[in-house]
Image 1 (cartoon, one colour):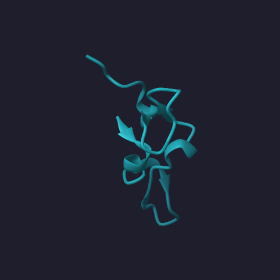
Image 2: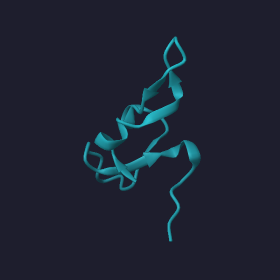
Image 3: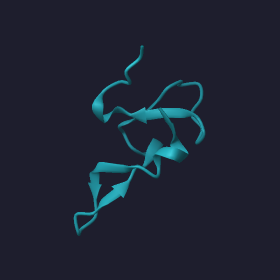
Length: 58
């Protein structure tokens, strides 16, 4: 789980430049972004990339 601000410094495997370089995560602007709590959707609230499915919980 990351805040949206933290996620924006992680590379996205789906976003590439014209020179095949990876681009950074788009956070809530991406359709794959999922919030941990739908009531809290600010830039410092926790979420995750839904590309790999849901988070693993103990």
